[in-house]
Image: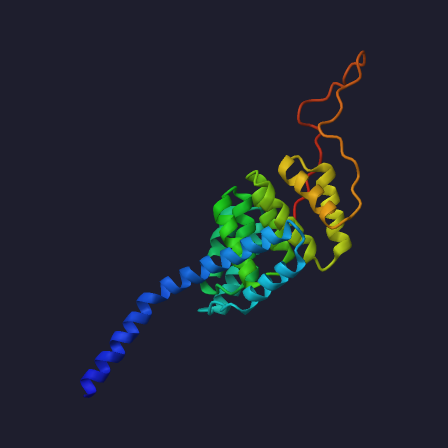
Length: 239
């Protein structure tokens, strides 16, 4: 009797151990679906739909921390490396931090930022969606995600992510200023147009933007300026 009991417990424990990665993968896929729904709903300013999906994400199970103190130490190393623009070193540190504590939204968010800086867009998207699954109202993660989509010429998702950036911004006036700067100065067409559409979506004033710039007037010799010495500024988010 006891032998059967222990055998049953061992079998159930083994089954749970084998099914854990599958359950985690299913949860991750569900979170990705809800985040994509929030993006799609935001493109039409569907406040009720975005809020409902946000609450579903907020109620979803969060990953357990294996080593929170180790995650904090790794994050500090990552921040120090990032300040020195040592991206590969910072990447390894934030990978360690997010593995030690998958629920550390700061570490996961920085991981997405560094992947984006390294032009590893798929990994950046995955990390930023993980951050948003932990904190769906995190405006800076939405902004980073908008940049990832903009750099991949995904106009609709860039618009939805920027719309959620403004929706969840703690300082709407500052968010509006950033959107306007992108709309007027950003070199990437997809991101610039997404910022314009976001301003219109929220019925914020939009200045007329002339793109591309007007050609030089006929008969006027252009300035002798070395190529690449002058360019429009590009807005980048604070991590």
